[in-house]
Image (cartoon, rainbow, N blue to C red; front, top):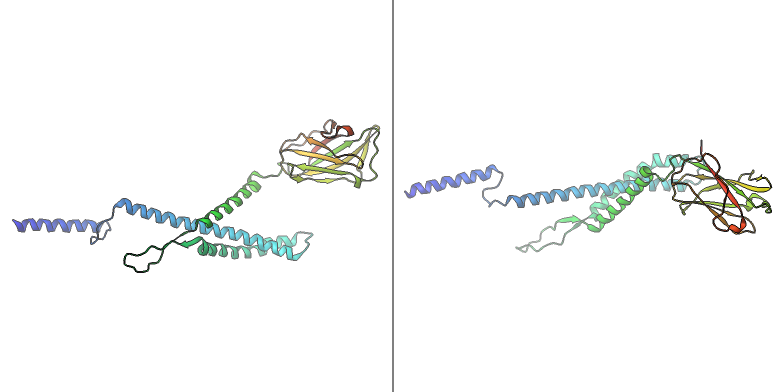
Length: 285
């Protein structure tokens, strides 16, 4: 009877060992819980994925820095470039060399600075063990902030586009002086500014035919080139002997051409001068 029980126990043990081997677990060792093994495998996969992504991101940022940096350096060393040939050659012919060097440098920086060793733990047997590595959090944060800034700039410049839908537009300005006011001696005495959004100054031109008349009133003529979207646009005029006067243009952020000149309007600041202004916005052809 005892022999039969022992035989059945041995058979059950062999069957259990065979089942362990079929699922890929060493039957000489106790089997680990499946959930713990799954968590470890998942954590290792996520860590490897993050290292690949951050390493590639570091290389791409280094590539952009090397491309533009080398191109700008060549342009700066070449000196004045009237036709733009030097800048084009530096960007498309020499810039890629800096891109390759920058990509290698970016990956090297990630492996050298972005990967750090964890604090080693004392082994139970007292033997020295190789500490595991991890991603440096300050390096990762700085890399993500830099990548986010570059992404926002690309979205602002290429997708949102700060430029007007109609491209470059010409703003024709006319300033009508009071009946008793004479014109300045020359156009150099006329100072006109057009601000876009309070930050940019549009290019203002006062040509040789810079004045005309409306009946018995002298009129100063000028043009300004607009190219950026702006929440507000302000025109200012300064003449010898009078304080600066300003007008706020009632144009949208991305305006369309106006059908003609607007009505004459007084200044919004110094109304005592009684200088009036009107404008016309047209699309450059």
